[in-house]
Amino acid sequence: MPGLVLGEARLEGDLIVFDKDGVLLDFDFLWTAVTQARATAIATAAGRLDLAAPLLDLLGLDAGDHVRPDGLLAVGTRDESRVAAATLLHQHGLAWHRARQAAGVGFETADARIDRTALTRPLPGVAAALRALHAAGWRLAIATTDQTEGAWHFLRVSGLDGLFRSVVGADRVPASKPDPAMFRLACAEAGVAPARALMVGDVDLDLLMGRAGGALATVGVLSGVGDRALLTPHADHLLAGVADLTPIASG
Image (cartoon, rainbow, N blue to C red):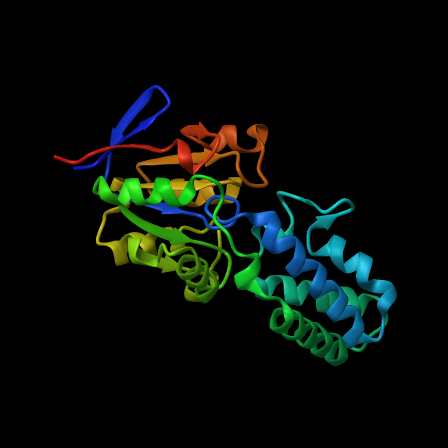
């Protein structure tokens, strides 16, 4: 069975479940542009351009394009962000049906205008690392708060889709992270018991999900929005990024 070197530790397992954004995908390159476009489009649809800045803050993007690790952009789902935007509009005087409509139109308009393909790229070293893990016998999966199709789009654009046994987005489960549903579904689709699977993520909710799901180990990576202080209490292992996952060939 395949193994891994994690710093000074070694372990054996069968499956690695990855969060996507900030772990495999260059988070800031894509999501800063998407969030800015959404805030502007929602404010325009509501006829309240003065609310573009408050919407950016609400969606989890601070001044200077800093992503808050505990904000909606980092850990929320698309539906949660849309409802939060509608709530902000309602709090600023729009009738609820108008606020809900403007938020929905804003999301759809922005997402249609953004060229995700041009803004989608793996983090440095990720593609080579995933291919090496796959070649060593590891099964691979994704559990992300993005939509499932968004994750598959990333894999197709990056030429990595053939490496993955399962992709689970927030639209496929009744509850998002840190609920273990995503992790457990990924394990089931990969044909691996949770106790033989690792969870790799860049925020605490990824690792909490893995632990709640009975993961073999949780691995925090510092390539996304989470820092050492956020990840250390929940990570069995802490690495700079996925490129530091060193496989040991099976057999």
